[in-house]
Image (tube, helix red, strand yellow):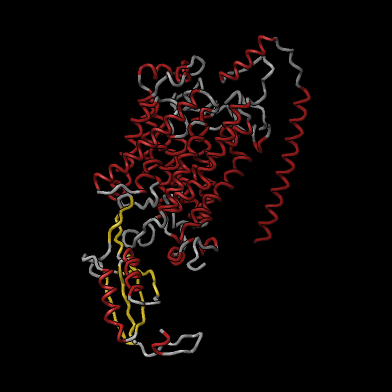
Length: 493
Length: 112
């Protein structure tokens, strides 16, 4: 049996190598066939430099087909910041909230997802989201399989000044953190193998199509950048793609998986609020890459997103802990941390579309609505969303997507009323009449239906193939020792 | 010889140690322990989930004293550890049959 699998893997590797060799051969021929362009005039060359300052197309100048240093530097920085959100930000945030016997399992899951998603992204994922040769509103194309042609030259369908390889890395970090968010709901009680299989299937069925629909140049719901978008919805940095998809899927998965052993009887208090706070701080800082980086340039939209991100998170943190103080008598560290994350989640779809006042309104609601979701709704329905992925990310993401529809301000982002795209697909009209929320509701509905239905199907497939839960003995002992052969803490050093 | 086991509030340890030093007690063993008595535990709330923590942190001091010093040492411990509130702790006294200093083989009171 093992031999058979090994030989199968070998055959697959050889096949992939041959395919990649043929791909490389093709691209060399294409390059040789390109004709030299005529020498641009001085005016055209100056216009190219102005285009760099204004983050627009430098067509006809001498700076086409190269990355703009400032914009590219910010996106490389942002990509690193978004990776930092997962490793170690989210790993510590979630790791501190589980019991000490399971901290390494959470960290292993975050790192396993990082590697797994990077491989999927390189082979097919990036192409399925940001390719275009299917000309489909629902899925990308095949032209970038195995990163074919994904080099330092910008892909002008998405940005004029960012190297496509940097753009692909930036988007990869989003693809990594999204499934990593799900593990918060199912922490302490799902087999590592089941999580890896679940994430693989989930990326294909939920993330790749959804990310294409929202951000792909031919995307179904890409109101800002697709003139033919059927639903002119807006999602700046991933309220639907990242937070709603992971949050709603997490709810379904945690219900199908069942509660942790002893849930409701034995104490399951966080084992380290210190690690949790450290992770939260990293998430806050990393989120600048997530939100301000989503401008895909170091421009005014990025500056505004930077500002709104800061305000929303700070306000939400203060409101969440303040509510605890009023209702329970003590402002807790977990309250501050939860508020920061909730504020960041809710501002995510709005960051580049609302003004500072809008972000403060978002901050207040982000501190209050997820607070009641985590402290009340969860107890009423009794599901074991261990670390509140649903309460924070699904409720927060849904709230954010909706509020974005009410609080957009075209003066902070001209793309909302652009003649090239927004005027054609109807977004401009919605912005001017204050009805963006109608498009948002449609996008939210599609996101929820896709996430919920797909997760139900995938969960049953995973259950049939490898099983979902470890044995009760393993769960009791903790996943660290049994699944990973290590312990987070030694009782005697 | 008597062994004194005193379970006290952690923040009173410094005062008790100074008090014992003043009356000439030269050694003690201190352990961080957890437990509960009439004070019971406390409640922790994480995102609306309440957990009752039964065991509170305390400090246990162990001292061996010659019979004639017992009352003075007990007085020093009790006066320094007292706050008058619930949870101040308890002191237990028991007989010790033998004590030996490993380095010199001295035994009895001389070994303390």
